[in-house]
Length: 247
Image (cartoon, rainbow, N blue to C red; front, side, top):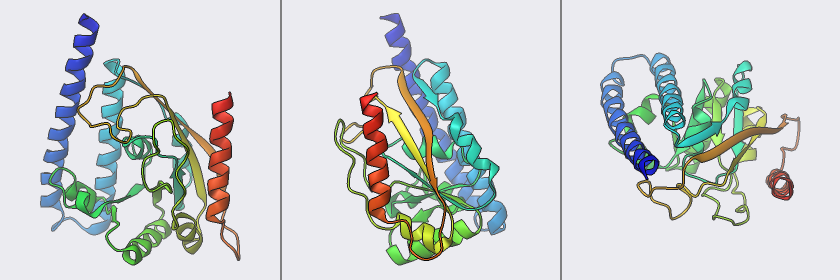
């Protein structure tokens, strides 16, 4: 009983702290945007996002709320060239788990979130990419990759249903990598936690500890001529996830 009360208190305090930190950073970022040079602001923005979420996950682990193993992703920082990081999408925390380990991580976000008071200015200063216009999104994604960004994408486009099959992949991932001339690095997110899956609100308490493991899969290098097909990429993910379920 005491342990559960401690976990509940830590859970809500961490959520409150994350909300307040996001709001403060959004206000600071809004003040920086007009005066700090673009490249400098972008580097600061991405560093703040990655560092903040690393601290958050470490605190959650320290309080006994989470068990996160994402160290495998650190190897992706050894290469200074652009990279499309493609992952399955069981939970809303997936992108935050990934960008916490990437030094040059950038995400594609819903346009509404880019205008959100808690996240908007912080996302804009990091030059995250809004998905309002497919053509503009494609152009910005390719430009970021050519500058050496690590672009995080979830080809399912939405979270996987709990206990369900992988959603059909949506077009765009392979085309972006092909046009930018960069590799696709696959990442597999493994969890049995229901937290922030489809239909699970952020304030609803899950069983603790929540366990997340992130592992690297195959890297698909760019080739002259035809790009890796979306069907090939989807088939690879389905095969690997099925292997994991059988073990």
